[in-house]
Image (cartoon, rainbow, N blue to C red; front, side, top):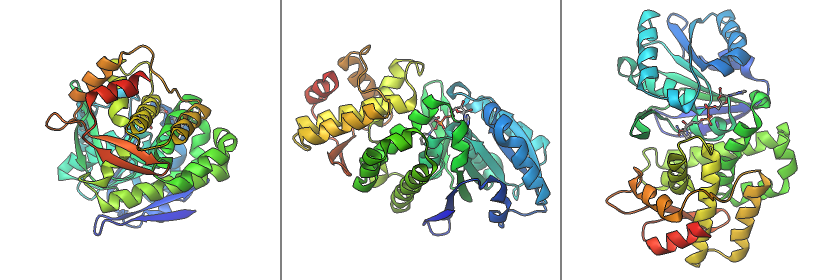
Length: 357
Ligand SMILES: NC(=O)c1ccc[n+]([C@@H]2O[C@H](COP(=O)([O-])OP(=O)(O)OC[C@H]3O[C@@H](n4cnc5c(N)ncnc54)[C@H](O)[C@@H]3O)[C@@H](O)[C@H]2O)c1
C-alpha cells in the first residue's frame, strides 16, 4: 500500500492507495471515536457491490455505523438529496463527533462530503472512492457540493476529508464507459506531468485492460500531482486552476448537449483537443505535440470532436459558464507535453478557429 500526504497544515491528510485494502480500513480510522455513531453513505450500485462487506468489517472493528443509500446520477446530485441526508442524519442521531464515510464515485463523494461539511457546521468524513475519476481527482482536495437547476456545482464548500482510501480492485467492476470517463482526467494529469504522459503512451494496452500494476502506478502519480497542487493552492486562487484543463470547453459541451450525449470525461477529452489546437494556433506548442495529444485521446477510446455543435454555440456557452470572470475567459493551454499555463487573452476569433478544427 502507498501513502501520500496532502500537506495542508492542520487540515492535511493521508491518501492511501492499494489493492484489496477495503477490509483493512478500520486500522486507519484511529481518529474516529468508537463512542459515537457514524454513517456510511453510498449509491445503489456501489452499495450492492461493496456496502454489506464494508459495513460488516466496520461493525466487527467495533464501530457503531448506519447506512443511507442515495440514488445515483448527476440529476440526484442536488439539494433535495442533501436535505434527505440531513433528515436521516438527525433521525439516526449523528452528532458533532460522528463521521461520514462516502463510498462511491464523484457524485457520492461530492454530495456526502457537502452534507458532512454543513451538518452541525461541519463533521469529519472519509472518502472511499470507487471510480477511476474519483480515485484520481474528485476525492482529493476537499471540494464538495451539489448542482442547482441553474448549473453544476453552484453550491458547495471546501471541506477536507480525514483521509482518502483508494482500493484499485474496486475498479474491476466499473462499467467500461465509466472507466474511460476517468481516463480523460488521467490524460489531463499527463498534460501536466511528462513522466505520467510517457507512461500513458507506453503502457496504453495494459492500462486499457486495467492491469493492476499499471493502474496502481497511474493512480499514485495522479494523486501525487493533485496533492501537490492542492497543498500549494487549496482555494483555487492560482495553480489549482490548471486542473481545469479541457473543462472550460468541456462544461460548455456537456451543458449544450443536456448532460446526456457525452460523459464528463468525453466532454473534457474534446475540450483538451480544443485547448491543444488553441495552443498550436498561438504557436505555443508544436504540430507534433498537438497530434500526440489527439492520438493519445483517441487511443483511450475518447472522442476528439463534437460534430453536432457549432463553434459559435460552444463559445457563447463558455462565456455563460461560471469560470468566465468579468467577461474574460480563463483557459488552460498546454505549452508542451507536461506543462500548461492559464491564459485570459485569447481572442474569440482564434478560439472559434480552434473549435472548428
Ligand atoms: N470534487 C471534485 O473536486 C470533483 C472533481 C471532478 C469531478 N467531480 C464530480 O464528480 C462527479 C462524477 O463522478 P464519477 O465520474 O465518479 O461518477 P458517479 O459517481 O456517477 O459514478 C459513475 C457510475 O458508476 C457507478 N459506480 C461507481 N463505482 C463503481 C464500481 N466500483 N463498480 C461499479 N459501478 C460503480 C455509480 O453507481 C455510477 O452509476 C460529477 O458530479 C463531477 O462534478 C468532482
